[in-house]
Each structure stands twice: as C-alpha cells, then as structure tokens.
Length: 268
Length: 268
Image (cartoon, rainbow over all chains, first blue to last red; front, side):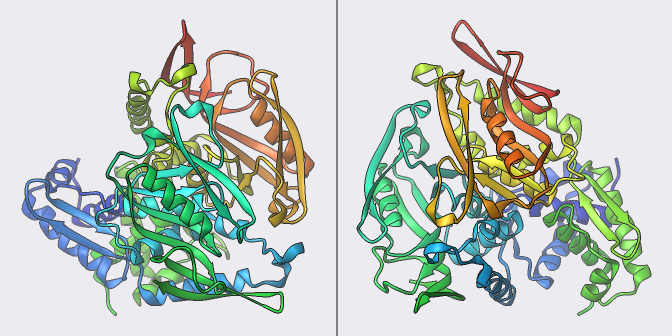
C-alpha cells in the first residue's frame, strides 16, 4: 500500500501520540509506509513542527543504535493553568459539600479526560527520566496514576489496603493516617517491584502526608527509591507535611469550615 | 499563526485521536487554524483516509446543528487477535503460578498500554451508543474500565467494597461471590448515577458471575439499566454464569490444576 505525504504525517502523529515516550525507529516507519528513509525523515520534521506550533509536547530524535523518535507529552503552562482554574471552579460548587465537610469529587477525578489531563500535567512537572514505575494506593488515585503512567510510558503499581491471598508472597507495612488517629496496613506483592528500582508516587490527596509517607516506607522495604511524588490536591494546613519533596496541583484551604480549592502548582 | 496543510492534518489527527467519540465542529478547526471551511473539509477527507487505510478506527461526520466530526476507535480484528494471542502467551508463563493455583497478572492488567488496548477492544465489541456510564468495582478492573470509558467518551463510576463516610449518602447491597461461600457488601454514592441511566459494566475477571450479578443488582437500586457487560477473562467452567449477556476476551480453562488462558472473543 502506498501513502501520500499527508497520510504518512497523519499516521505518524497518531502512532506517536498514542504511545508517549516510546521510541520508534526510522525503519519502523519506512516499513510501515514502504518509503525511503529520506522521505520519512522529511515527514518527521513536519510532525515535529506540528507538536511545537500547537504546544502539544515535543518530538525528539534519539541518536545511536537504540535510536529513533519519541513523543514527550508536555502541555503548555497557559493550557494547564486554564484547565486547573476550570476544574477548581467545578470542585468549588456548593452542591459538592457533604455532611462532615467532605467534598464529593469522585465524578471529577474518575473522569477519563480529566484524569488524562492530570496525568499529562504530572508528567510535565515531575522528572521521570530515571523512573521505573509509577506507584499509587487504591482507590481514588488510580485513574490519575494510570494516566500519569501512560504519559510517562511506565508500568503502574497499585498498593492494596489489605493482604490478598491471590497475589502470592507480599510485603506489607503499617502507617498512621488522618492526623494520628488510625493505623492502617498496606501491602504489595513481592514481584511487583524489582530491587533497586526508582519510583514516582502519585495520589489524589495529601493532608498531613501520612499516607504518602507509608507508601515511601513500603518502597524502602522493596529496596526502591522514590524519585518524585505528585498529588492532585494538598491542604494548606498543616503547612509542614511528613513528606519533603512533592508536586501538588491544587491547594485546599479550609477557613471557618468552608473549603476552597485553588490552582496552585507547588513544587517542594 | 498560519498552518500548512500537512501541519493542519497532523494537528487534526492529534486532536481527534486524543478525544475519542467527542464531536468537534468545523468551526472549531477553522478558528484554530485560521482557515476557510472548504480547506478544513478537504483536510478532513485526508484524515478520514488515514484512519481507514491504517485501520485505526473511523472518523465520521455528524450532520445538523450539533454536528461535526468525531473519531470512533475501532481496532482491526487481526490486530486484536494478535494482541490477545500475545498477551495470553505472557499470561501463561509458568512463573506466574502462585500458591493455591492463582495467577499473578496485575503487572499485565495494570500496564497502561495493555489496559488502553483492552479498552479499545471493549469499545469495538460492546454497543455503547445509548450508554451514560462505564461502571466497575474496585480494584483490579479499574485500569481497563477507565480506558474503556476513555475510548467510549463516558464517565467512569467505581463501586467500592465498603461504605465510605466521605462520600455522603450511599446505596449499598450485598452479593454472594466465589462459589456461594462469601457474602460481600458493595456501595456507591447516591450522586454517582442519575436515575434512568444506561450503563456498561467492565471487570477483569468472571467465574460464576456473582460479582457482576451484584453490580447489576446495585444498578437496579439506582434505577439504571445495564446495556452491556465486558470482562477481560472468563472461566470455561462453570459454563452457566449468573449473567446472560456479556463479552469476554480471554478464556481461562483449569484442567488437572493447570490453568490455560487463550484468546476467545465470546459474545453471549
């Protein structure tokens, strides 16, 4: 089958965009389109300019034997600001306040487009160049962690809140969550993370940081190093968290029992 | 900013491919590219041909006031067969057998690329034209259910295994899982599903069908109708499930304590 230049370009964009951070060799495309290397190289220049002009991320060329091209998703700052502003407006809707002052947010954080966008923002603000896994804890953080893992082209690991007999040998630990009041246990199959790995932790919410701290401790048990942490919402108080280095996209402030969420890209 | 034809086509492919089943008006593109309607119409013809030639799904035009174009992901049957064959080979690896005969599969079903592919296959085999939500139960089904919801452009709803005080008023029910031995309770916030909705249920595994039946019963409590069910793996025995209509992608057969998974696209 023969492809026109416009068709080849459309196809390359589709393939790269569906597979962020995956390297495709020049031969992959020359075979697919039955075209010369020079032709595909010219196509790739156009593809690069599409991504740059529309601020959709970057297409980079990797030299060498294992070389090729890959697409690094990176949304523009204005677009991210716009998105976070818009989502905070939705989350601040009075009808979302539940008894006890909780906010009903699952329809938002489980939404595939929103989770996907959060994943891309996480990938734009956390250095994952050395990371081997994205790690989260069930349940609410899973959709955004999965989408972060997709954007970073990394496998996802989900920590469970109890020990599952169906997952073989597990390593578990306990942590204190919710302002020192509850002791919880979490576990992960031994096979889930290879020794000496580097991981990125993603979760939907952080108050004191106890849960994230529990995840970091569990990673230590696996001989893994946490090289980045991203939370969607963090509370303004307590200011001192149990975790030092993290990225947070939205700040939750509670004043006189009224919760307000605002975009606040924190990098600590 | 001015765009060349090749750049416009690349950009349209990116936008449609990132937003399956979302309708984009012609004006959306004419504004974005600062181009005439006739120009964008010609671009769209090329885009349609890219998707068709490479069997990446379909780009269709919707007429009328709310009209525009949308991208319907639909992988080719050969590609799906290839994928399922390949994944079954991986899952049948002897090292995956755990004590008790369980199989270690979480690294596979949590993998973002695999979950995404499963989601597209679900969307290619389940009629979701009338559906309002994709529903799953925590935890293992979440990644593939999220990706199915993304492909279908529907919101995702996650049923929890216990009642969460932080989610307000909930509706819960009990069901019998695992060959009549265990009674489990599941719950969902009242706000999660609007009355008279139609839903698609997605889960990773079905043996007797008790869990799916529990989810269907819970949907009845919400006044919602289940219009499609998709499971990734279903067991060959028992042949009679508690659920009548479902799509299953992989069959698990247990003979003499040995598990074998094989691609078997079932539509019951």
